[in-house]
Structure formats: C-alpha cells, structure tokens
Image 1 (tube, rainbow, N blue to C red):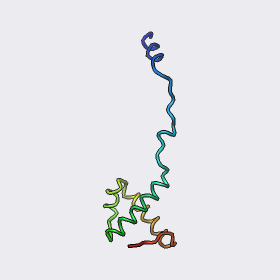
Image 2 (image 1 turned 90 degrees about the vertical axis):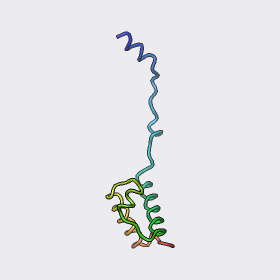
Image 3 (image 1 turned 45 degrees about the horizontal axis):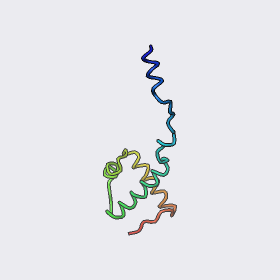
Image 4 (image 1 turned 180 degrees about the horizontal axis):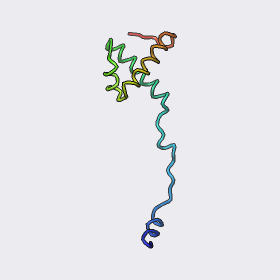
Amino acid sequence: MIADRFDRERQPSVTPNPRAFQLEPVRHRSEARQREITEHVVAQGSSSPQELASMFHVSLMTIHRDLDALKTAILAGRVELQR
C-alpha cells in the first residue's frame, strides 16, 4: 500500500495532447491515394486492383472504392488523364 502511493507520487500526472496523435483525415488520405493511383496507371498503362492494394498497403475493397470514385470523377470531368 505504501509502495503503491509512493509510485503514484513519483509518476508525473501528464495528460497527453490528443492532437499530437491525430492521423491525417481519411478524406485527404483517400484523395492523395487516388491521385497516386491515377499517376501510376497513366505511367504504367494498366494495373490490377490486387497490385494497387499491395502497393498502397490497403484492402482490395478500399482500392475498389477508390477506383469507383476515380471513374465518377473522370466521367464528371473533374479528373483528366494526361500522358
């Protein structure tokens, strides 16, 4: 009991800053990944979803969502593919 109290008194009572451990917002990560996917596919000519998933260390479903978003953006004219 005395040892427990002694240990608690020696440990600083610092609360971690929650902002220090924040990750980049998901939307920004997916936009950056989609931009990189576009650059990769334009440079290589083609790529399989499996290859992209392993290259970006994400799931196959994430790549399919990214490809769907890119397809929609291309059809809407928001993304232009340039060689």
